[in-house]
Length: 203
Image 1 (cartoon, rainbow, N blue to C red):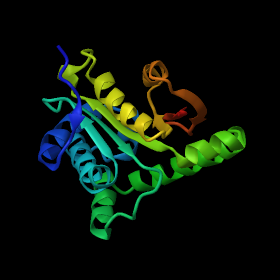
Image 2: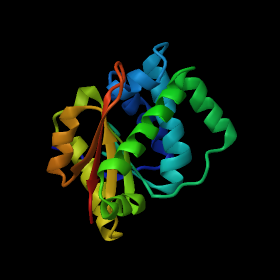
Image 3: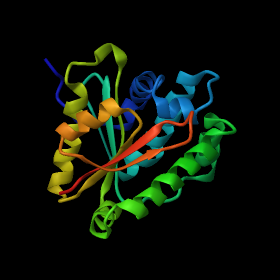
């Protein structure tokens, strides 16, 4: 039986970091933007920093009871990261990671401006973002990912808020389509960078 989803608290941070570090250790995007040295540990600390300093204080984070699945949603506007946190993120990503992320973000923004209608771009600009979804590899295929995402989306429905996301795994596209998202852009970055699918779930 699946554990019910609940709002995460700061007490969950160590388990959130462990779950997301394992979940994203082989993900194409993190493999491209985070140094290979002690890769899973770097990813775990990066996720903990983002959840601790961004998602928990400004957005919503949803977990199952055992914190083997995590979904983090962010509002459309966020304050700047503290300088020390930003510097640690850059260090964890490694010399090329931060720059690669910036290049990819610029490419997605340019492609969106080129192909997405103005009214859809306006919706995206005001939408929340499903920033992170991860299930520990030992607990996959049990519906936990759907459970934590559904809980977050139900909260956004109460706010009458749309939701956007980006994924670099084509298998995830079909998962999100079942949850009501539709692809808005596909950006094929120069190899070995991963392809990026942008998606929107309009309210």
